[in-house]
Length: 138
Image (cartoon, rainbow, N blue to C red; front, side, top):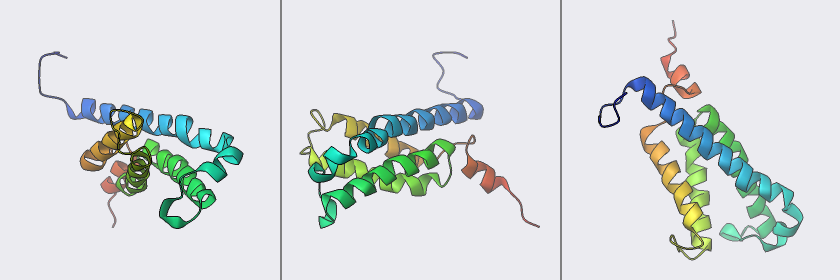
């Protein structure tokens, strides 16, 4: 592989997208979803009240999105559909921090960029979505 070339093989692209999905989904689960579960008692009264549903309901929704949708993202199953709630969650997180993308909301903004990128390009060939799309019905 030449380092100065702009051409990329389909296998390399698919591997890169797989690695990106694994990292983004794994980090979302480990650093955000699981952390919220561990700190559930403290966070259920302090969490941002999204859509006026109450802080506890908003926290449960955020945990569900951050864990379930991230698992779907890792496996590449219903990838674009699972990215929509993750994108919305990151927009809420960025808004909670006053849209300071070079301050407190920086991590949320980076996740948002990754999720939007994957929404645009798709999960790649190393995903369940790709395998499901290759099936033929008789």
